[in-house]
Image (cartoon, rainbow, N blue to C red; front, side, top):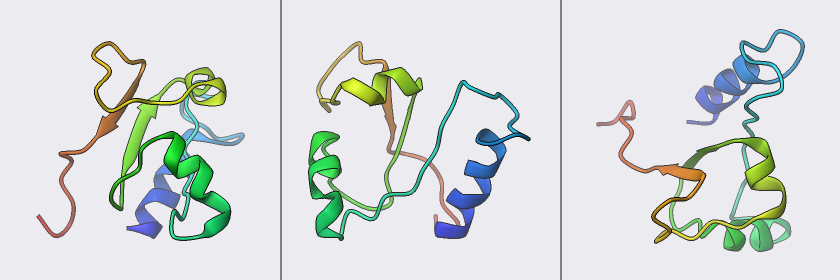
Length: 83
């Protein structure tokens, strides 16, 4: 999955971004201790996991899986190459 995430990130980030300044995408390895706090903040429970939302919503807030009207959405039923 890693090459696919990086390919999508290039579409959204940088000078050649399709939607500059609107969407940011990054890869975080939740198996590394340095990322534990970040992964806990967004309730990452399995890998890979993709969240969708405006950058300001990620900067200061956390995400609760049971929030009904959250501005951050988890994409949990997406298709992969394996299914």
